[in-house]
Image 1 (tube, rainbow, N blue to C red):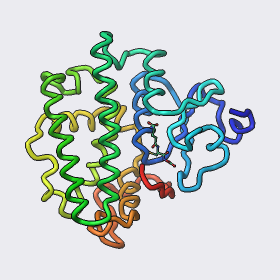
Image 2 (cartoon, rainbow, N blue to C red):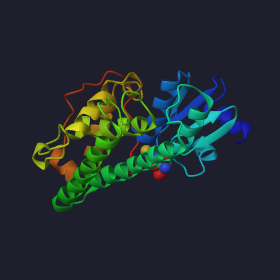
Image 3 (tube, helix red, strand yellow):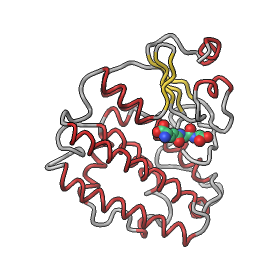
Length: 261
Ligand SMILES: N[C@@H](CCC(=O)N[C@@H](CS)C(=O)NCC(=O)O)C(=O)O
């Protein structure tokens, strides 16, 4: 990265700067991992609908997150999380290479679930919305089975210790803290007969690192984002709907309208 771009980005005062978008689940992964490691960091939040030049100079794919470390720009959230796991304790991956590979595979599964969530909230009509909801439900059923194998008495993916698969799924489940409140969602039966997944989701929602990965106005920002999609879900929400369960606690609401977050 050019030094000028770093200056424009305000990077340099702390060892880690996380270039963020307020709703991005991949950014949240990095924020959670940094918090779990006790590593202080600064945030630089951008509007993905209007990507600044300094950001495009840092991010080869034009995506958040970017983690700025000693003048270097790291991109791709999984890569960044793996890096953080190599430089600071506590370890978020198992020691055993085979188990570690299995956990990485479930991290990748988490990325596929995020794509499924994006497809769900962008579904153009009711038929597709319902089909994509059922596709998501199938993912929860797969996770229910995986938890039976990995989690034991829980509460996390691999038992008592919080790990990298938990880092990935904290942001996945957070979407549903808003989505579950939307009209007609209960009828879709998304969470029927997946008690282990629900137990896991609740444990992740209580984790300080997961809670602190977003701003206080996240729920309101996500609600506004979903409402603006022009999708079947937006129409269910209704024009002019205001999110009331989690009133805004911070002044800045994201102005970004990327196609997905
Ligand atoms: N594989 C990437 C995905 C990152 C990603 O898709 N970020 C979204 C926001 S959540 C983004 O920057 N989108 C802007 C764009 O694609 O133009 C990662 O894990 O970091």
